[in-house]
Figure (tube, rainbow, N blue to C red):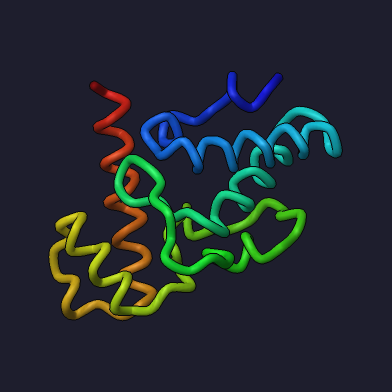
Length: 132
């Protein structure tokens, strides 16, 4: 099935460039691996090189590069990801993202704690957006 028909809701609320990146990577992965989870993991991995998840949508990153250890892999396997949070970003960037998402207690958090708090805030925002 073409990526355009399988576009995740978070990408529907994202810039056209993010949608195009995911669709192109997904369709290429389907040709290589077939339809299914592996094609989706590959598409998200490609997306995470240029975009990061903020709330209920994806935004262009200032600097291109993988967001987490899974996105660094050319063919990501199942495993723990940062769920679109740019875990490779500086603590300052993560703090600013947490502030935009109104994460409480962010000033006392470590970098890993900020990543976790942003993941949680993103999940909540996505769930709210789906409920609209």
